[in-house]
Length: 277
Image (cartoon, rainbow, N blue to C red; front, side, top):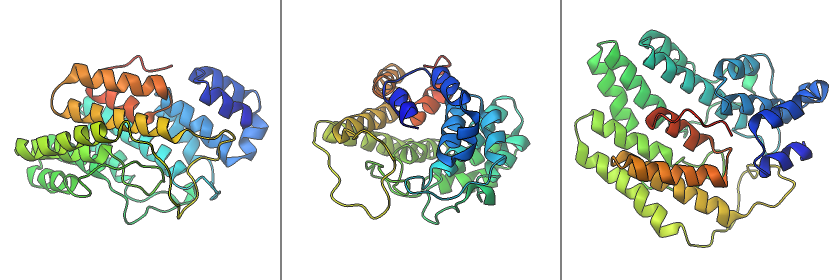
Protein backbone atom coordinates (compact mmCIF):
# COMPACT_ATOMS: atom_id res chain seq x y z
CA UNK A 1 0.00 0.00 0.00
CA UNK A 2 2.81 2.41 0.91
CA UNK A 3 4.62 1.88 -2.40
CA UNK A 4 1.39 2.37 -4.34
CA UNK A 5 0.73 5.61 -2.47
CA UNK A 6 4.22 6.79 -3.38
CA UNK A 7 3.60 5.98 -7.05
CA UNK A 8 0.30 7.84 -6.81
CA UNK A 9 1.93 10.95 -5.33
CA UNK A 10 4.63 10.86 -7.99
CA UNK A 11 1.97 10.83 -10.70
CA UNK A 12 3.07 7.49 -12.09
CA UNK A 13 0.98 6.26 -15.07
CA UNK A 14 -2.22 4.42 -14.21
CA UNK A 15 -1.09 1.29 -16.04
CA UNK A 16 2.19 1.21 -14.14
CA UNK A 17 0.33 1.41 -10.84
CA UNK A 18 -2.10 -1.25 -11.99
CA UNK A 19 0.81 -3.51 -12.93
CA UNK A 20 2.21 -3.06 -9.41
CA UNK A 21 -1.07 -4.19 -7.85
CA UNK A 22 -1.41 -7.06 -10.30
CA UNK A 23 1.95 -8.43 -9.17
CA UNK A 24 0.44 -9.13 -5.74
CA UNK A 25 -3.06 -10.50 -6.43
CA UNK A 26 -3.37 -12.38 -3.14
CA UNK A 27 -2.52 -9.29 -1.08
CA UNK A 28 -4.86 -7.08 -3.12
CA UNK A 29 -7.68 -9.58 -2.64
CA UNK A 30 -7.14 -9.61 1.12
CA UNK A 31 -7.43 -5.83 1.57
CA UNK A 32 -10.47 -3.70 0.76
CA UNK A 33 -8.36 -0.56 0.35
CA UNK A 34 -6.02 -2.12 -2.22
CA UNK A 35 -8.91 -3.81 -4.02
CA UNK A 36 -10.61 -0.43 -4.29
CA UNK A 37 -7.42 1.22 -5.58
CA UNK A 38 -7.49 -1.27 -8.43
CA UNK A 39 -11.13 -0.43 -9.17
CA UNK A 40 -10.30 3.28 -9.10
CA UNK A 41 -7.55 2.75 -11.66
CA UNK A 42 -9.98 1.01 -14.00
CA UNK A 43 -12.33 3.98 -13.66
CA UNK A 44 -9.44 6.35 -14.41
CA UNK A 45 -8.59 4.27 -17.47
CA UNK A 46 -12.19 4.46 -18.67
CA UNK A 47 -12.77 0.73 -18.18
CA UNK A 48 -16.06 1.28 -16.39
CA UNK A 49 -17.57 -2.13 -17.08
CA UNK A 50 -14.59 -3.80 -15.49
CA UNK A 51 -14.79 -1.49 -12.48
CA UNK A 52 -18.50 -2.26 -12.17
CA UNK A 53 -17.88 -6.01 -12.31
CA UNK A 54 -15.19 -5.84 -9.63
CA UNK A 55 -17.38 -3.72 -7.36
CA UNK A 56 -20.18 -6.28 -7.63
CA UNK A 57 -17.82 -9.17 -6.87
CA UNK A 58 -16.87 -8.20 -3.33
CA UNK A 59 -18.45 -7.65 0.07
CA UNK A 60 -16.77 -4.50 1.36
CA UNK A 61 -16.51 -3.68 5.05
CA UNK A 62 -16.21 -0.20 6.57
CA UNK A 63 -12.71 0.96 7.46
CA UNK A 64 -11.23 4.09 9.02
CA UNK A 65 -10.59 6.61 6.26
CA UNK A 66 -12.66 4.65 3.75
CA UNK A 67 -16.00 6.35 4.27
CA UNK A 68 -17.61 7.23 0.96
CA UNK A 69 -14.80 5.83 -1.17
CA UNK A 70 -16.43 2.61 -2.37
CA UNK A 71 -19.74 4.31 -3.12
CA UNK A 72 -17.92 7.07 -5.01
CA UNK A 73 -16.30 4.61 -7.42
CA UNK A 74 -19.63 2.83 -7.78
CA UNK A 75 -21.35 6.11 -8.65
CA UNK A 76 -18.61 7.09 -11.11
CA UNK A 77 -18.78 3.89 -13.14
CA UNK A 78 -22.61 3.83 -13.17
CA UNK A 79 -22.81 7.48 -14.22
CA UNK A 80 -20.16 7.20 -16.92
CA UNK A 81 -21.84 4.12 -18.36
CA UNK A 82 -25.14 6.01 -18.34
CA UNK A 83 -23.55 8.90 -20.27
CA UNK A 84 -22.25 6.39 -22.81
CA UNK A 85 -25.75 4.95 -23.21
CA UNK A 86 -27.17 8.44 -23.75
CA UNK A 87 -24.63 9.07 -26.53
CA UNK A 88 -25.56 5.73 -28.10
CA UNK A 89 -29.25 6.72 -28.01
CA UNK A 90 -30.10 4.04 -25.47
CA UNK A 91 -32.10 6.11 -22.96
CA UNK A 92 -33.78 3.15 -21.25
CA UNK A 93 -30.41 1.55 -20.52
CA UNK A 94 -29.12 4.90 -19.27
CA UNK A 95 -32.13 5.26 -16.97
CA UNK A 96 -31.54 1.80 -15.48
CA UNK A 97 -27.91 2.69 -14.76
CA UNK A 98 -28.89 5.99 -13.14
CA UNK A 99 -31.65 4.42 -11.05
CA UNK A 100 -29.12 1.90 -9.72
CA UNK A 101 -27.42 4.83 -7.96
CA UNK A 102 -30.57 5.68 -5.97
CA UNK A 103 -29.83 2.94 -3.43
CA UNK A 104 -26.38 1.50 -2.95
CA UNK A 105 -26.08 -2.30 -3.16
CA UNK A 106 -25.59 -3.96 0.22
CA UNK A 107 -22.19 -5.33 -0.74
CA UNK A 108 -20.68 -1.81 -0.85
CA UNK A 109 -20.73 -1.83 2.94
CA UNK A 110 -22.32 1.61 3.32
CA UNK A 111 -25.64 3.29 2.74
CA UNK A 112 -26.37 6.60 1.07
CA UNK A 113 -26.43 9.64 3.35
CA UNK A 114 -29.77 11.42 3.33
CA UNK A 115 -27.88 14.69 2.79
CA UNK A 116 -26.09 13.42 -0.33
CA UNK A 117 -26.57 15.90 -3.18
CA UNK A 118 -27.31 14.34 -6.56
CA UNK A 119 -27.55 17.28 -8.94
CA UNK A 120 -25.57 15.45 -11.61
CA UNK A 121 -27.73 12.32 -11.36
CA UNK A 122 -30.94 14.36 -11.51
CA UNK A 123 -29.63 16.35 -14.47
CA UNK A 124 -28.88 13.23 -16.49
CA UNK A 125 -32.21 11.69 -15.53
CA UNK A 126 -33.81 14.84 -16.93
CA UNK A 127 -31.93 14.39 -20.19
CA UNK A 128 -32.96 10.74 -20.37
CA UNK A 129 -36.64 11.45 -19.78
CA UNK A 130 -36.49 14.14 -22.45
CA UNK A 131 -35.00 11.61 -24.87
CA UNK A 132 -37.84 9.26 -23.99
CA UNK A 133 -40.35 11.98 -24.83
CA UNK A 134 -41.53 12.25 -21.22
CA UNK A 135 -41.18 16.00 -20.86
CA UNK A 136 -43.06 16.46 -17.58
CA UNK A 137 -40.83 13.93 -15.84
CA UNK A 138 -37.80 15.55 -17.43
CA UNK A 139 -38.76 18.91 -15.91
CA UNK A 140 -39.26 17.31 -12.49
CA UNK A 141 -35.68 16.07 -12.51
CA UNK A 142 -34.25 19.27 -13.96
CA UNK A 143 -35.88 21.17 -11.09
CA UNK A 144 -34.46 18.65 -8.63
CA UNK A 145 -31.05 19.28 -10.19
CA UNK A 146 -31.32 23.00 -9.35
CA UNK A 147 -31.68 22.36 -5.61
CA UNK A 148 -29.03 22.36 -2.90
CA UNK A 149 -26.16 24.57 -1.78
CA UNK A 150 -25.43 27.35 -4.25
CA UNK A 151 -22.09 28.44 -2.78
CA UNK A 152 -19.06 26.18 -3.33
CA UNK A 153 -16.79 25.05 -0.52
CA UNK A 154 -13.67 22.95 -0.20
CA UNK A 155 -14.78 19.31 -0.04
CA UNK A 156 -12.36 17.58 2.32
CA UNK A 157 -14.70 14.96 3.74
CA UNK A 158 -16.91 12.46 1.98
CA UNK A 159 -20.08 14.13 3.24
CA UNK A 160 -19.08 17.66 2.17
CA UNK A 161 -21.05 19.22 -0.73
CA UNK A 162 -19.12 18.77 -3.97
CA UNK A 163 -18.51 21.94 -6.04
CA UNK A 164 -19.45 20.32 -9.34
CA UNK A 165 -23.03 19.98 -8.09
CA UNK A 166 -23.40 23.75 -8.57
CA UNK A 167 -22.21 23.36 -12.16
CA UNK A 168 -25.05 20.90 -12.77
CA UNK A 169 -27.49 23.32 -11.15
CA UNK A 170 -26.51 25.80 -13.84
CA UNK A 171 -26.91 23.24 -16.62
CA UNK A 172 -30.35 22.34 -15.30
CA UNK A 173 -31.46 25.98 -15.29
CA UNK A 174 -30.36 26.16 -18.93
CA UNK A 175 -32.51 23.14 -19.75
CA UNK A 176 -35.42 24.84 -17.98
CA UNK A 177 -35.00 27.96 -20.11
CA UNK A 178 -33.58 30.26 -17.44
CA UNK A 179 -30.10 31.36 -18.60
CA UNK A 180 -29.98 34.13 -15.99
CA UNK A 181 -30.05 31.72 -13.07
CA UNK A 182 -27.67 29.44 -14.89
CA UNK A 183 -25.15 32.26 -15.29
CA UNK A 184 -25.45 33.10 -11.59
CA UNK A 185 -24.41 29.56 -10.67
CA UNK A 186 -21.46 29.56 -13.04
CA UNK A 187 -20.28 33.01 -11.96
CA UNK A 188 -20.33 32.07 -8.28
CA UNK A 189 -17.92 29.23 -9.08
CA UNK A 190 -15.54 31.64 -10.81
CA UNK A 191 -15.79 34.22 -8.01
CA UNK A 192 -15.17 31.58 -5.34
CA UNK A 193 -12.05 30.30 -7.09
CA UNK A 194 -10.61 33.78 -7.57
CA UNK A 195 -11.30 34.72 -3.95
CA UNK A 196 -9.73 31.70 -2.27
CA UNK A 197 -6.98 30.48 -4.60
CA UNK A 198 -4.20 32.42 -2.84
CA UNK A 199 -5.55 32.13 0.70
CA UNK A 200 -3.86 29.73 3.17
CA UNK A 201 -6.04 26.76 4.03
CA UNK A 202 -6.20 24.75 7.23
CA UNK A 203 -8.48 22.28 8.97
CA UNK A 204 -9.83 23.72 12.22
CA UNK A 205 -11.51 20.49 13.33
CA UNK A 206 -12.99 17.31 11.99
CA UNK A 207 -16.03 15.30 12.96
CA UNK A 208 -15.41 12.29 10.73
CA UNK A 209 -12.21 10.50 9.84
CA UNK A 210 -9.84 12.22 7.46
CA UNK A 211 -10.45 11.24 3.85
CA UNK A 212 -7.11 9.60 3.11
CA UNK A 213 -4.90 7.28 5.12
CA UNK A 214 -1.76 8.73 3.57
CA UNK A 215 1.72 7.97 4.81
CA UNK A 216 2.91 11.39 3.65
CA UNK A 217 1.41 14.62 4.90
CA UNK A 218 -0.87 16.42 2.46
CA UNK A 219 -0.15 20.02 1.51
CA UNK A 220 -3.52 21.64 2.17
CA UNK A 221 -2.59 24.78 0.23
CA UNK A 222 -1.97 22.62 -2.85
CA UNK A 223 -5.33 20.91 -2.36
CA UNK A 224 -6.98 24.31 -2.06
CA UNK A 225 -5.32 25.49 -5.29
CA UNK A 226 -6.55 22.40 -7.12
CA UNK A 227 -10.05 22.98 -5.76
CA UNK A 228 -10.08 26.62 -6.87
CA UNK A 229 -8.73 25.86 -10.34
CA UNK A 230 -11.37 23.17 -10.72
CA UNK A 231 -14.32 25.35 -9.72
CA UNK A 232 -13.12 28.18 -11.98
CA UNK A 233 -12.86 25.71 -14.84
CA UNK A 234 -16.43 24.61 -14.18
CA UNK A 235 -17.61 28.21 -14.11
CA UNK A 236 -15.92 29.20 -17.36
CA UNK A 237 -17.15 26.02 -19.05
CA UNK A 238 -20.71 26.82 -18.00
CA UNK A 239 -20.36 30.35 -19.34
CA UNK A 240 -19.18 29.03 -22.70
CA UNK A 241 -15.45 29.80 -22.51
CA UNK A 242 -14.27 26.32 -23.43
CA UNK A 243 -10.65 27.30 -24.09
CA UNK A 244 -10.20 28.92 -20.68
CA UNK A 245 -12.02 26.03 -19.00
CA UNK A 246 -9.70 23.55 -20.69
CA UNK A 247 -6.70 25.51 -19.46
CA UNK A 248 -7.90 25.39 -15.84
CA UNK A 249 -8.72 21.68 -16.01
CA UNK A 250 -5.31 20.98 -17.55
CA UNK A 251 -3.70 22.77 -14.59
CA UNK A 252 -5.77 20.63 -12.22
CA UNK A 253 -4.64 17.43 -13.89
CA UNK A 254 -1.03 18.57 -13.93
CA UNK A 255 -1.16 19.05 -10.17
CA UNK A 256 -3.28 15.95 -9.56
CA UNK A 257 -3.41 13.36 -12.37
CA UNK A 258 -5.87 11.35 -10.26
CA UNK A 259 -8.52 14.09 -10.14
CA UNK A 260 -11.57 12.18 -11.32
CA UNK A 261 -13.88 15.19 -11.38
CA UNK A 262 -11.86 17.12 -13.96
CA UNK A 263 -11.32 13.96 -15.98
CA UNK A 264 -15.05 13.29 -16.22
CA UNK A 265 -15.87 16.90 -17.12
CA UNK A 266 -13.18 17.11 -19.81
CA UNK A 267 -14.34 13.86 -21.35
CA UNK A 268 -18.07 14.63 -21.22
CA UNK A 269 -18.13 18.33 -22.15
CA UNK A 270 -14.86 19.09 -23.91
CA UNK A 271 -14.46 15.95 -26.01
CA UNK A 272 -11.08 15.23 -24.46
CA UNK A 273 -10.42 11.51 -24.79
CA UNK A 274 -6.64 11.37 -24.27
CA UNK A 275 -6.82 11.57 -20.49
CA UNK A 276 -4.89 8.46 -19.60
CA UNK A 277 -1.72 9.61 -17.87
